[in-house]
Image 1 (cartoon, rainbow, N blue to C red):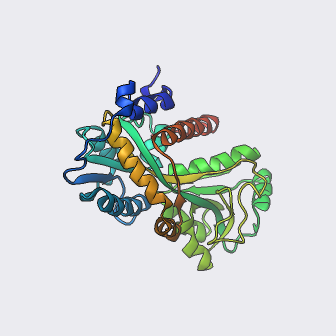
Image 2 (cartoon, helix red, strand yellow):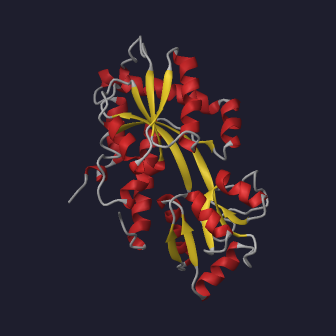
Image 3 (spheres, rainbow, N blue to C red):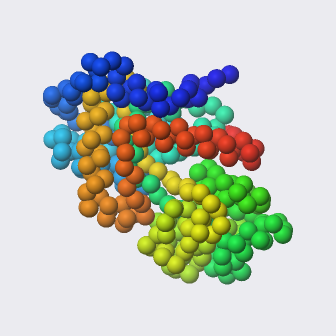
Length: 326
């Protein structure tokens, strides 16, 4: 059976954001948009990466577009509640979804069925931020480099802690590239996985930089590699996965903005342009660095293309490791 999200995302996004006709493409955003408060829905609780980025975006858009942008946290049910709420909202530009990768890509491979469609039910607005990860071991671990860990994985039984489906898939990509395998031990959240790793109950794990950094600096964990293309200034001595013998390896958690499907393409472009200006701001670059992230510039088409590639890559990894779905 062909699912709706398997249709080419780029073509769909292009039609939605630019309009199907020249007249639509040339149209300007409604002159008075926005003329009342805009709600930004976040599927994670206050203090999370997506929530923090959403609040920064809300402040910027309020200053630029002269109307309140109000963040509404709607956590729970694996982000289903928030995604459904936005998908069902009136497509008038007054409800926005600032979403992490979980509801917009990872859930497709983590669950057999979703009560929403991450592609058909939304129109991409703009990517906002990405968060590099670090592969970590406990501080007393004998492994001081990724090559040493890889050698051990080839030699005998090992285990890793998977705090979320995203981190599990990042680890599985590393294992696929090196033809190694460790037993997956699932945890309810990144913090639980990292704390159990520090306690010596699994051999390695993965977490975003902001999550692992306090434990690394506190002498509980050791970072072996980061998943970004370049080294991270918070962990300058830690090589990248690419430097550690994994060509082309990059993996990030990310946050992006979406509207419900069928929102006026001119409104999409107006908000996307404002978000793009925000990511060029030195204050935003510094803000994101402070929470372990970096700007992820682009417009509606770039986000659509990225989402398409991301879904395809996650499906490839999940199929090769025969990842079970909930």
